[in-house]
Length: 333
Image (tube, rainbow, N blue to C red; front, side, top):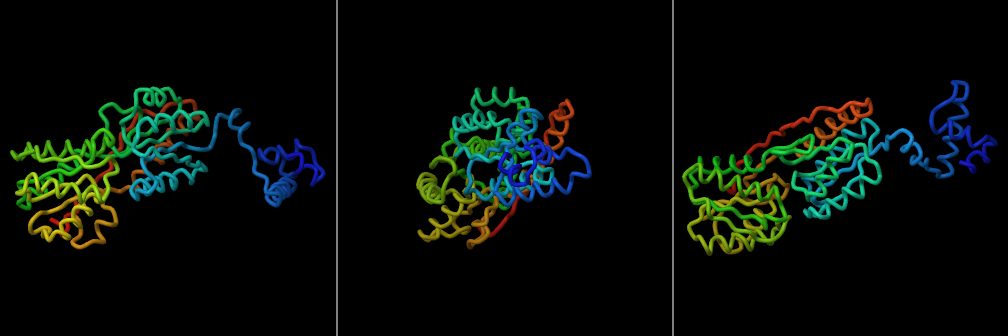
């Protein structure tokens, strides 16, 4: 500020007033000169002091499981689009599907005084849950529907979505279905999908015990390839494999084609997530699709209302927003 003031021959207080937007209409020309000079000098305004005095940091913390997952990337884009319209920025962190990492990131982000927090799912360590409850800012859990949410929720039931997929496959004549997923401890949403598969199979009077765990979240294409072989070696009469994700389903499909196992003639394959890879292969993979961008945008819009209420000294009542999903039946089934 001293450098800017010296270049223009004004006081540091004048520069400070220009930054804060205070002053009279007659000083607007000088304010614009000050801001232009800052731009020329590459000076970035330090918002730290303003954050402490106003309790408005201007950013929201958001945690997603992975940066290279297009679904979570779309959610982050939707969140950013909603918040940027109100001048709020997103500080993004990724947990790598690890709840201790999530706890550490929540703790670190809270030291930077975010105005809201968005997390993925509802599976947290007890310490992380305590941090979120005591944060004093709006909290939104996404990509799930929770029996005991911390505050706000934007998502859908992963279990119900897979259950709906099983019923669609049943309607097409499949009876000896199996589930291919990862190690449940690392992926709560994957565990919910497995539970949804088992519950749907039992409700239809079918064998719900054909299930296998291969790899850790995120389950890869290679895991899917390995898993489908293990499934068909253990249960040769399986007629449909429901995979925890489209990536696992693509790996399973590729391995079947490599071995000469007709899809869907010998075995049908379904995935979850409606990833691009599932629509770019042949046959295209049956999947569960949801509006990933819409999850982020809806979370952002809800967060804005919650932040506005907090700035007014009020608290927005907890809300649960259900995002619809749809079953896309394609050539793999």
